[in-house]
Length: 190
Picture 1: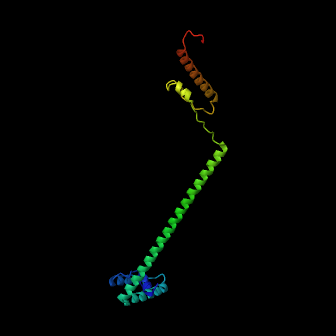
Picture 2 (picture 1 turned 90 degrees about the vertical axis):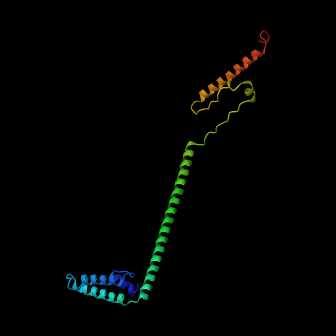
Picture 3 (picture 1 turned 120 degrees about the horizontal axis):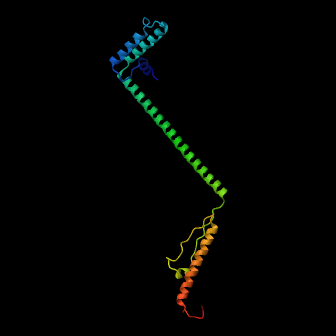
């Protein structure tokens, strides 16, 4: 911080302020820190008043070129500060994104481990066999006559066995009926 910047800071004004604003700020500070009005700490008030007067002299003695240089320095510092804020914000944003990605990966690993432990407890999944129908049975029976296929349930094996036997018996009965219509009635084969 240069002496001129410090002077503007002591007076509490900006380099862009005009002479009237500078004089008004100086007068306000002189009134508040004058030894006659500061009854609590007159020695501290004398020191502060001396600083205020030196700062006012430095500001009022500076040339317009000096003020322009000061404005450029201040603008450059503000740009650097803004750049630092943006970089800090980007680093924080990247850190949050990385943390979220790690959390998702951890959840995925936990889910996979949970699935693996669940499947290990259950054992291998049973294979479902595909039912094949014989071409001869398809030719002999029409779709309306065929019994619907039933899925075997784990607890109903006996029922499924009875159903398959009934389906077979139904097909045998259909075959017998069709043979009786083909054979003569008074035959020696019956």
